[in-house]
Image 1: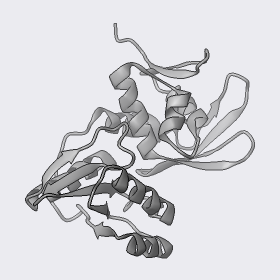
Image 2: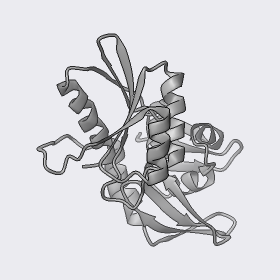
Image 3: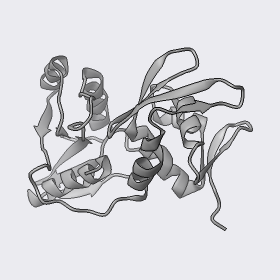
Length: 224
């Protein structure tokens, strides 16, 4: 199961609990993957499929989700995961009233069609693991690791950085919707400022084109 499928799995879980569920778009969701409503109450839901990755839910994730929950005027926030939440994140969640629900699809029969993003991640981004990418100025980025939660890269300065899969998902879906995305738009969506790495990686894919003119952007290659 991919992270996108896990989000749908979580949404269906709440539907089966007789909630009215609204799945959010991949852009401007502020970290909320779905809203669940019942008996006049509104719950913000965030799905984190970390079970087969090295990533763990930390306190910053909890605090950011708490802010998103309040932004959307929700009565409650639930983080759903099949992975691990570290101890200080548990403390923050308890303090802020964020519920953590452990939900694994491993023993359940759940099938759904892969989305276009899933296909790109599996067939084009994951194969970049271990490869070195060259910029126009000769500087390099090495892709250390690609899993279902993030990409880890080493910059030309020798610094290591992890980039969450969520921002790749938002970026790619934005491109398919609007035809392109600028580095500034990516930075607006992602507080960790990793737009240079994102556009460099996506520029390696056959369906996208890196436009280096200002403002720098990633554009969808025309199929015509």
